[in-house]
Image (spheres, rainbow, N blue to C red):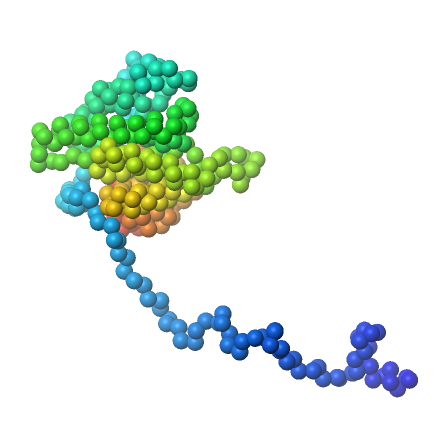
Length: 336
C-alpha cells in the first residue's frame, strides 16, 4: 500500500487521484464545442496596409446663395453686423408693454427681457437696428432670434410651437425686408440674412448639478428637435444662411448640425452654414473644455462654409485663437 501511495501525485484530490508524471489526455473538441473548422471572427489573411477611402459626395444641391456668398468671400472680407442685444439695450424706454404688444397682452408671465419678441411687438426698433448695421457697411445681418427655440422660450412660458414659429418667421421676414431695401439702393452689393441659432440655455456636456455629475436637464433628442423647429421657422421667413452661434458646448453644436442635416434632407437642398464658438477665458477653451483644434474636429464633418469665434474675449485677446483656428480648419474663418 505504501508503494502504491508513493506513485500518486500528492496534490491530487482525494476523489480524483492522479499518478506522478501522468500524461494529460489530449483534448478533443466535440462538435458542440467547435462546430466549425474555420475561424469566422479572425481577420482575413490578405489585408491592405492602407484602407481605401472614398471621396465624400453630397447628393443634395446647394442653394444659389452658396455660390454667390462663396465668390464674394474669395474676393474680399465680408462684414457681419454687430451685437443685437446691446443695441436693444440702448432703447432705455422699453417697458413690459413693449414686449407684450397685442399678441401677448394677457400672457401670465413677465416678458420684459425676452428680446426676440420685439420682432413681433416692436418691429420698428429691430428694423431700425438692422438698417443701422447695413448703413455701416454690413454684408450679413442676423435675425433677432438668438433665443428662438422652445427650450429657451420656456423661461417665459412661451415654449408653445406657435409662439416659437411666429418669432422665427417674423424675425426672418423683417431682416429680409430691410436687406431688400438696402440692396435696392446699391444692387452691386447684395446683402444676406443669417438665421441666428443660439446655444439655448442648456448644456449637454456639463451637469447643472454639482452633486450629480451625470445629471442632465435635457436630452440630445430634445435639443435636436428644438433646433429643427427653429430652422423650419427661419427658412419659412426667407433666411439666406444659418448662423449656429456662440457655441460654448460642442455637443450642442453637434445637435444643431444634425438638426440642420435633417432639415436639408427635408427641403431637398442645402443653404450655407456659419458656426461660431466661444472661448471663455485665456486658457483658449470653450466652456466644455475644448481647444480650438478640438472644437473644429468636433464639427468639421458638418462642412460649414465658415467657422469662427465671437467677441467673448474682446478684439485684442481673440486674435491668436482666430489665427490658430485658421491654421487647423479648411473653410473660411470669421470673427465678430
